[in-house]
Structures are given as structure tokens and as C-alpha cells.
Length: 249
Image (tube, rainbow, N blue to C red):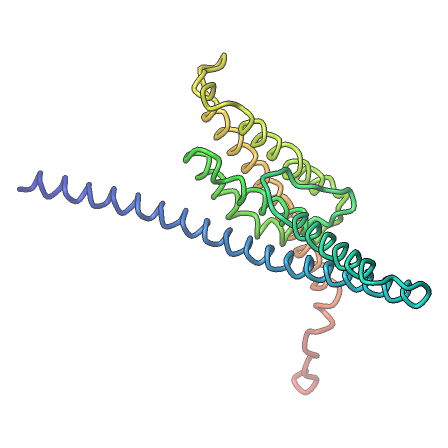
């Protein structure tokens, strides 16, 4: 009975660990989905605003032309058709697809992290399960990385390293993986690793690199805080000490 009980306890403990890992992954996925919904809602608002502005401009132009030249029914219908076409074009251009983040040199660090987060969320479903788990770990670390990066200049060397990882290297890795036909993904390379294994290892390396950058910046903030505290203490600490009681002298 003792052996059976021990085996049962081990099985239960193993199941608890597996369920805890699954719960952690599901929590990361839910958090990433929530952030993506917020971005989509914000993007929808901007798209509707652009459509409204475009339709307004076309309407004003039609009215202005009508005051000078009679446009007639066909001119009015042409203006309506133009407005509908522009609105449809703007609506379609606001759609999301799996594509590397479009990053300009003047894009702030915080928005850079958001675009990379959105890209990971959209690309996740096309990846194998082990890579999805690695993407979940990477996504879970992005909110903290964003808070750190948005406080430092875009041209900071650490920020530049993070931007290259999020805009070039990691999206390029995933895009190249998606371009490989499924029939060839089981082939092994010179190190006896298949495509899926190489993808997981590269994603893990990128995640660790971003984590190191975030930790380096956080430790720099801690060091700056400590230096500032020591300076204030050494400069003003003695002035704040209570004056000696002269009656006791």
C-alpha cells in the first residue's frame, strides 16, 4: 500500500506541475489577447476617424464644385461612389495580417514593443506547440520591457539592441520558418536538429537577450537611485541632525 500511495502522490504532484504550467501559459495567452484587443479597438477608432475625415473632405469638395459648376445627378453619384471607395480602401488597409513590424527610426520605444507584441500574438497560431510556449514566455515579459524602454532615449545602445531584436531578427526568424514547406520541417541540419527545434532555441535565445537588456537597464536605474540617495544623505544629512541641547552643556 505504501508503494501504491507513493506512486499516486508522485502522479498527483506531476499532474499539479503540468496543470500549473498550463495555467501559466493560458494566463500569458489571455493577457496577450487582451492587449491585442485593446490595440485593435484603438486602431478601429483611428480608422473610423480617417474615414470620417476623408468622406468630409469629399463632401466639401463636391459642394464647392457644385457652387461653381452644376454637377447633376451623375456627378453626385460619382462623389458618393468615390466616398464609398475611399472608405472601403481605408477600412481594408487597417486589417491585420502576419507581417513583420513596420518600424521607422523615429518610432518611440514603447510603440516598438507594442507592435512586436501584436506581431507575436498574430504569428503564434502558425507555430508548433513548443514554439508557442516560448512565444508565451516572451510575450509575458514584454509589458515590463516596455515600461523600461519607454523611459530611455531611442538611440540608447541597449534600446537599439532591443529594437533590432524586435523589429528585424525575431520577426525575420519567424517569417523564414513560416516560408519553409511543412514537408521539409522534419529535415535535420548539420547539428542534427530539425526546423522546429532550431526555431525554439532561437526564440529562447532572443527572449534571454531581451531579458538581459531589461535587467541591465533596471540595474542601471537602481545604481542611479543609490547614487542619488547617497549624495542627498552626504550633502544634507548632517544639516538635518538635531541641534545639541545647550542646557545640558
